[in-house]
Amino acid sequence: DTAVSQTPKYLVTQMGNDKSIKCEQNLGHDTMYWYKQDSKKFLKIMFSYNNKELIINETVPNRFSPKSPDKAHLNLHINSLELGDSAVYFCASSQVVGPGNTIYFGEGSWLTVV
Amino acid sequence: EDKVVQSPLSLVVHEGDTVTLNCSYEVTNFRSLLWYKQEKKAPTFLFMLTSSGIEKKSGRLSSILDKKELFSILNITATQTGDSAVYLCAGSGAQKLVFGQGTRLTINP
Image (cartoon, rainbow over all chains, first blue to last red; front, side, top):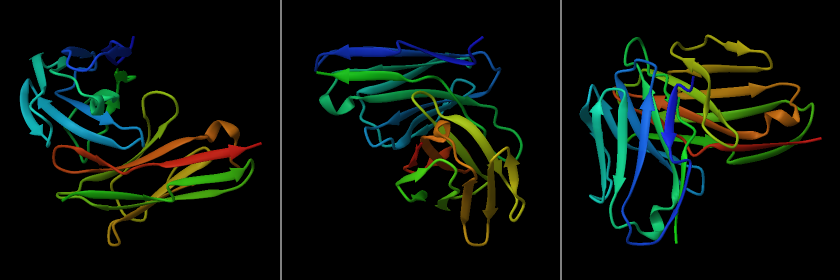
């Protein structure tokens, strides 16, 4: 019944590897996001997709590439992982209607690069 | 550049105390102000505020928005140990939420 689900929940990998995190939402929302939360708990947007189209691409290294096969899925692929990529990555979704965006978050993917 | 600033960054109080968490924002095409509570995992939604001066309440939690001063507060009365968490404030712009750095609240028994 999970509204926004992401896998894997925990990932430990070596520097230089390539890894992917998958995200799916069953809320029927049009917009999906990837946020990165660093060790100081600061949540920062990375990407946003609306109906499979990229609408926000913050200053993120090219090693990060999102892919949205349909509006219910937004995956994040990371190439050549670096130590500084260690963080919690949250997928989220919202329905962009009304006066504001209430965003619903997945449970996070804890990425540790060693 | 859009910015959301929360204060204090950290707060430790005793059970039963009342706390006030602050959030100031500068967000382009501002639409609403949201509060989230984050314990160990995903942030969970608390409030969305769109109008100035109208208090929203949920149990012991309440929040209000001042669109003139670009400011919001979150009040928690009669705090309990279960209120210990990071509280995140976010300003909603045209297409995204901009988060503050959070206030880490610790309630001691």
